[in-house]
Length: 135
Image (tube, rainbow, N blue to C red; front, side):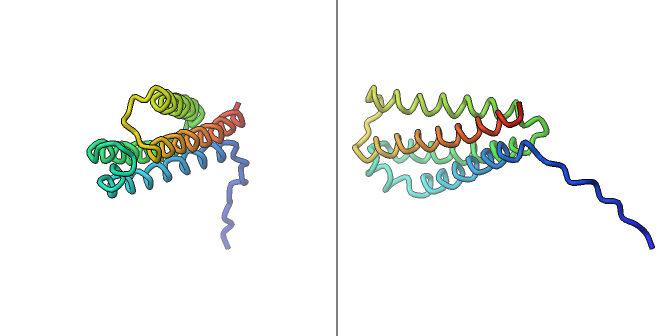
């Protein structure tokens, strides 16, 4: 008979950060696909052009794929800090764009943009908690 030595279970302190990054990535990619596939009807609802809707959707898919890959990095704390900063800057830029009326948004478009900023800040907060757990 042979004995199989299994390593002791380690308590992972980076699981919250990795989960938050993967959840963010999954939601971004899913919403990006939805936006890209429905760019024409969505543009009539939001006030943006179909091309800009498609580009935004494609960018979200690319960001989601990159973020999902980065969530598996060995040094996830540094990556997490950058992701938190990117999310906060993105949310702030969205709010500034809405307040300054830079984009020709309808009322529904404004609501969608602010909901996007709120969801982004929610993920940034969860990722921040994950980064703090690693400190």
